[in-house]
Amino acid sequence: MATLKELIAQKEALERQIELTRNEDRSAAVEKVRALMTEYGLSVSDLSTKRAKKVVGSKVAAKYVDKATGDTWSGRGLQPRWLKAALVQGRKLTDFTV
Image (cartoon, rainbow, N blue to C red):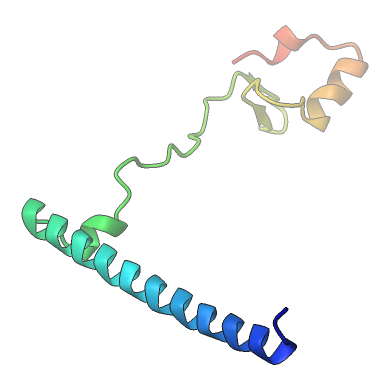
């Protein structure tokens, strides 16, 4: 059976081999990427640009308006407080239609 010192020495040797192999693999990968970039005429900026633009939510036209205050609601999401209060008071949603 191996002694503790021998096992530690083996571990250190393996760690050096792992690091050396990792660096060699990384260098090979970089060379492949450079070759492909040259072949296709790509630059570093081509790699970092996003091709698909994010769709940003746009404003929706108001469907309901309180003519007294000018408050509006698009009809999306939760009803605003001003509209809820008016509905509780007996007004109808159609009263606020644009």
